[in-house]
Image (tube, rainbow, N blue to C red):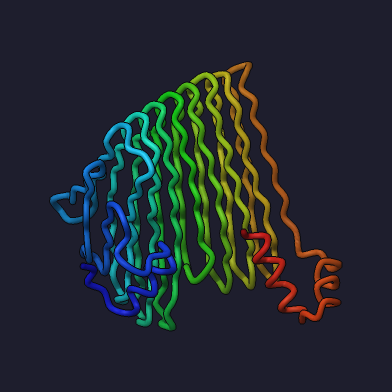
Length: 308
């Protein structure tokens, strides 16, 4: 049974789309403590002895099962670092839902740093969803610094959905991946900043096996005086293919920096980077306004469609 107050439950809905106890394996962390945990026959969740993280073991051949490990924080001044290791057995096909939400109504900064390591077994497939969300009217900041490491065995697939749309004051997301033969990594990042928020996204992917493939795409919107940096480095150490893309809308006094990095260490490494940063086209706004929307409503419609 989950032991959470109404604020924590609201945050949980935002970061994990959970309205009740989830099916399958789960661990829900609230204000530095476990608020509920359950394993299944195929997925075992083991807490670390120091209480600062988990070991999740998924048996080989596990299919159509899920793991939920969201974090919610509703007290001002909490700062924590949590370590979670995932061992995905060969031939598995699972979904892992994480994410963190902070509601800070106080004057002290609240911060959660999550370090996740994924060991993706041969011929297995994992979809990883990580959402970040912030709320609260306090002067204290909402800070999230996730680190994700992915180690992929032969012919495995990892699809990552990284989402941060609202309320996070400061974040530095670092993602590192190592791909063996035939492994495939797909990353889709959606990000919006406003006010004086700062968001740094760093991706470093090493394609070490023949036929490995990486596709890293970021879509973002920078509003007000916020700042974003997208820094993606793909390294091809074998015959492989890699693609990175930064597609961004800049508004008001926002700032965006896209830093491409491609390193080919094999004659058959094919690497591509694309980047586009610009404002919303005036004719798009005018077209929507002719349908009865105000200028502000038209902008919101365009942004919502862009970040889908």
